[in-house]
Image 1 (cartoon, rainbow, N blue to C red):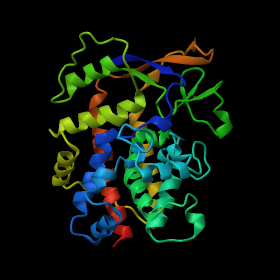
Image 2 (cartoon, one colour):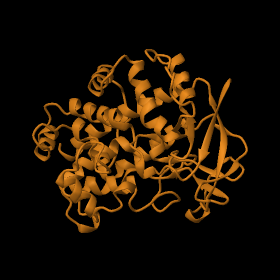
Image 3 (cartoon, rainbow, N blue to C red):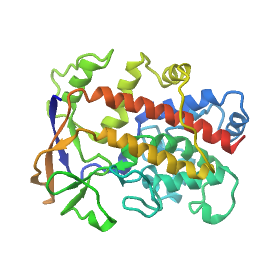
Image 4 (cartoon, rainbow, N blue to C red):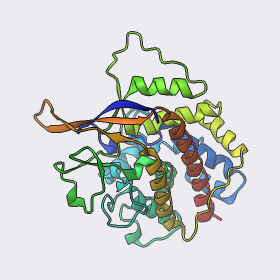
Length: 349
């Protein structure tokens, strides 16, 4: 298979807590799918009681990212209150299970008490009406629980928000056996792929040649050293390509188009508080596909302006990478929307 070489830098410049999984359009697509699937149900009525006038699952789907900064506009009082009460809120959005693993297990390497699986469990318990304080250590209100569930059901279906890449000093993917193995000497944490940088021009050129409706990038007058974190590629570029492949431009159009195809999806089983485990395991399958046929050359040691040591690696990805990656993103977005609707219907039958 023909390969396209891209340079990836493993640095401390990007953090998983800064990632906006699926970006604005991806999260809104998940919310829009659920909005449409819940029409006329009791769950729709119960959800509406927790929303403000004019809100929908689509519109609130980005709330948990908006609280991280001012890019959605000035911080509203309820955002300020939430952030003040949840100093580790940025960690609620992801977990870092080595992508080579098949299952998420509590207390395993890469997991944390405040990761996305545990946070979803707690928010689901709150909406279920469970009042045991041990099940709600963050003190989420019912409205906050809905806001978080709507967003994080999208997050957990983004492969790189569950399956993490760890890199050995020889530039190969490795599987740490315990947390202490990730020592930045022998094993490096790629921070959910945020520290892996793809050449943005090359990514755009690949997509332009393979994704319907994607024009050749016009880069005249633009610096050529543009880079895109691998995580950001999955957050936004794959979503853009997925929408274009079915000739849709908005989250609402995407939602209607995929619902019209009547997709058949595996059903969640058991108590809804266990569903995040099932979703995480499913995302590990997708993460393996995301990293399939991705290989490294030897690491090159660099020194930052602060004197910190880091490494660069040459990464090779298949030349047709936008095709399978956008297909995976489309599938995961559909699963996110349908699973969100199913969850709310299970909580509010």
